[in-house]
Amino acid sequence: MTPLALLLTLSSALFTLGLFAVLTRRNAILVLVGIELMLNAANINFIAFWRYGPPDPELAGPVFVLFSIAIAAAEAAVGLAIILMVFRHTRSTDLNKLDSLHG
Amino acid sequence: MIPLLILSPLILLAALGAVWMARPVHAALLLALSLALNAVLYLVMGADFIGLVQFMVYVGAVAVLIVFSLLITRPGDEAEELRRRPGALLPGVACTLPVLAMVLFTVSKTAILETGNAPSISMESLGKTLFTSHAPAVLALAVLLTAVMIGAALLARGAHASGLPRSASCETKTADETGSEPPIS
View 1 (cartoon, each protein chain N blue to C red):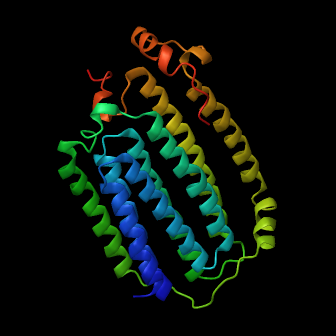
View 2 (cartoon, rainbow over the protein chains, first blue to last red):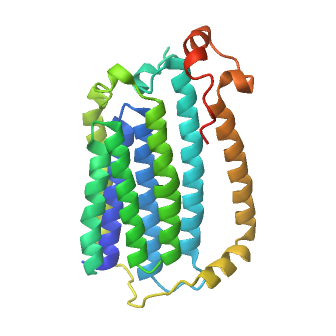
View 3 (cartoon, each protein chain N blue to C red):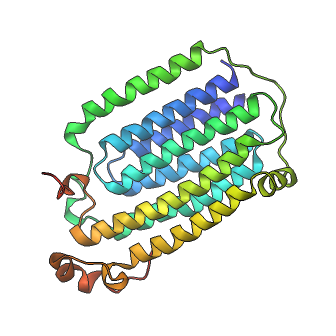
């Protein structure tokens, strides 16, 4: 197994774990944890292709990862602020209880 | 190759703990561990700056933010039942396993062009690339981060401070408990 294949396997497993967390967790904050895992898996792919792929003088991989990290941080901040707001209204972060739009 | 072989299972184990742990705080701390090991992985692969940024932003900011949110939204007596949706385990596995199988199949079947050279990434070249060819994106990111900072502070301040409508139940329950909380972000 080459290093690139190893890293791609690692990132696909991480992505799958994150997806599983997003689909099954009941606590809204832990759903956000799953999203962070999925974003990290994508970042590993970028760095892996930059390191073991064809040479790239433009440094597209690392630059993309920098932007991705910044946007992930922004997403986490807004997501957690929204969850806090929901918690203030309902006194719960249980996603199963947030069904007031249910017809 | 050897450091990768050592680090990969550790990252996966920490992430598995973050996904599986019942107690939210344990899950958040294991996520922080997984992100920190990820930063070490970047350092091992030669992307020093990216590793440091990952450590500062993810471990220093995002993980701490998640832990603080967990402390604030402490569910109290329902802590133990906040595990996972009982009816979602089977659909969760049914959705995730095909994704994993698909990606692994693609990786194993694709002839990957792999060069043995180790590219070096100097701070200078990265800065030059960022602030010349990617300058518009950096500016857009600056605007985005400013908007996010203001928005998150506004949201976390609460309904009474930002002038948003609030429900009657919220008013009675949160006026004394969370009304005087400082902004989160």
